[in-house]
Length: 149
Image 1 (cartoon, rainbow, N blue to C red):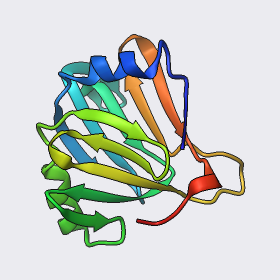
Image 2 (tube, rainbow, N blue to C red):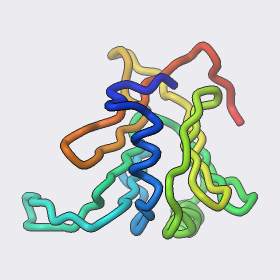
Image 3 (spheres, helix red, strand yellow):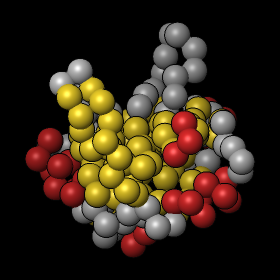
């Protein structure tokens, strides 16, 4: 995974994320996952206002494995098992990103290992991290060290 749009730099972003606890983790369409972190921010939608996180992590075009308390759950598991595991991310904070394998690490030993999905349309984002100030950090595929964990 290559990180793109890392402004001002990764260490500053990680410092900003230190106090941003996850308060919602949800399974979306296909392999999509979303995590709301930090303060609640009202956002307009077609259906009205909803609360989103000050930080919004969207696992996008990737297969993933979740690991919490030594237990691993993959995108192939049942929705109920995935939902129970996602609930265990509540209260945790992002503490780091690694490239090989692509991984987002959370406090308390939780992590999301990402495997880019092949695309006929070029590079699709593995994840997007929306941050205050309309900044977005993008995780792009890097197939040079891809392996399944």
